[in-house]
Image (tube, rainbow, N blue to C red; front, side):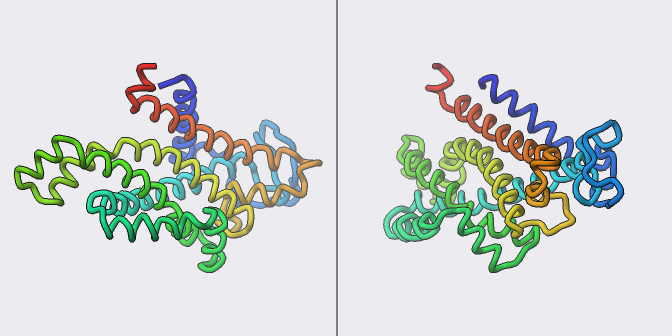
Length: 269
């Protein structure tokens, strides 16, 4: 793995630690308002300053890691499981099954821009953490399914799979014992990049007012609340924006490093 991937792992570790130990790291109650202390600049008492309602920005950024990781991990797990199952079925059975799944179902979801489809789904379902996760899972499984289908189409022609079939092994045994373990590696990279996409999508939807409703300390909501004061109080927007950028960058670095590590050709080069 390259140096950037180690930087990504370090940043991701800080994010995870912040999410787990937020109550010990945060210096103030993230939802406590103090209108007499609005828009304070960063100081020893308020490391990142305060926002328009006098809330401590550092504490809100720290607690925001919980929401971002909860959304990212849940979306990746649910989307990955659904995508692996559908993609494996399409690639293994082929024929009319593959035509219906990859030829029609995949293309229906890929015909719409992902974020616009998420906005439409959240607008229909309503705001809330669970509904946001559901919307992102609905649009996120297709990427995993396409990768898995391509891998299964390749692996099912390998000699050890043909030998297992010749020895009378059933379809489920061949699929789960011989094909999936040898087709799962690219999904690890996809999951890392999917984490970055889920974090960014959650922040985007929250910025538009379609994500986590206030006063929850979502990074996207913090940016939306601070955008009108950026010219006079830039700290209220800079710190949550930097948290989003660093988190997304970290998982992208990790994904690139895993792609290089898991690809023998790139690793040798």
